[in-house]
Image 1: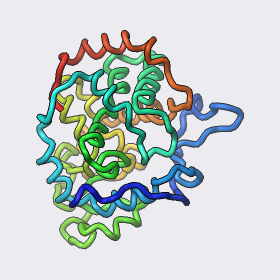
Image 2: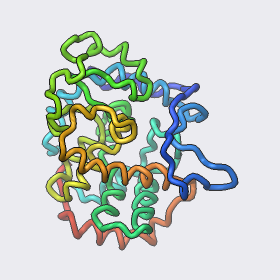
Image 3: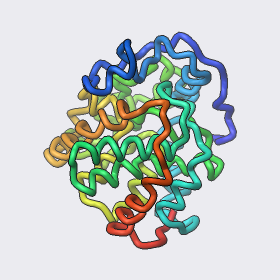
Length: 286
């Protein structure tokens, strides 16, 4: 698949709401604020983004991207340097914010820290989107961001804009359209290929440095069909069920810490650079 397929187009009539809101993040002003609101947002490109994403995220495409980028070896840089590099990117699939990526990362980490969670959880909030560096490596956003889902098996109707899979060649392959597809029941998500994006890429970058729970958050935080809708339970094993408790615990911080007030990056830099240094070497492979 040519990664130069356009992924920018006006989109309207967005139609999926997040039903799980944390009370303290709902009210930002006088009226409750809606997040992941695909019905009322005017943010350009989202519906078109998912149309292209669902058409071209085939099993073959995913395997080709894994072969291209894994194991990570294209360059080396530090984690804070990666955050600064990413700071030019605004995620077109996200209808909730127009701030930079570093703003979102700090907002997420600060919300987790304010609730007294362990350092590894705070650090996970800080770095969870760094895989979006793929956009700066020339990948279109539809192959980097947005909700993720298993490929090589039947598409769950819980996936946002499920109707767009009709244009995906895998939808015509009988082997890929049974409940388990190419996998075995309860095989474990480690054995399942997901649509290619920043989650899997960052997981592969940091998998030798963080605890299992942190890695699950990074790898699956965009898989709303599983952690929000509880789809694909037939592919999960006991380990998956255990770590997904942490993925679900992370979601309110990822979604509802977003606001249009940017954090004070200068005041927070020393704390977070020291936190990074407790878990990561000065340079890692990307």
